[in-house]
Amino acid sequence: AVFTRPPTFFFQPHRARGGRSVGMWSTLRVAIPRTGSQAWIRTFSSKKIQAPPMTYIAGEEMSWYTMKLICDKWVEPFIDTSAWEHFDLSCNARDDTQDQVLHDAVASGAKIGAIFKEPTITPTADQVKQFGLKKAWGSPNGAMRRGWQGITISRDTIHIPGIKLGFDRPVFFE
Image (cartoon, rainbow, N blue to C red; front, side):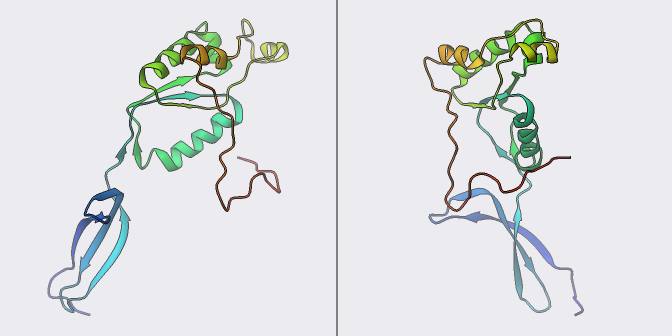
């Protein structure tokens, strides 16, 4: 088809019932001049969603690596996390700061009131040698419970209907 002028592209915010704008979805409307027909394409908005303030506590070992992949691929491209306060509670970070990073994370969690904590480890005597630590630092969970007035550190699995728990074959990351 030959067009007398190029197609017109414009965005319309996706509206939920009641006319409220919802989330990061937009609708791209393409008006084709010659035929007058229109095509609707669902796309992502160019704006990121602003995340509220939160204390993000990074952990140790595989959980840290897994959360890094999740944040890099599925959180950071769509959500502005600049209001998050990040703390590294790995054994080496706690050792390097004489456990000050734990106290800073607890203070941040108490101030903000929204906390995401990856699993952390309490090093055994063998791990103290393996990691080259100055000493075996205590469990961070006890300090967090005291600093957050007894809030329980939940280790429960989130059950999602239709999702099978566990795995049939091992997963390897390269």
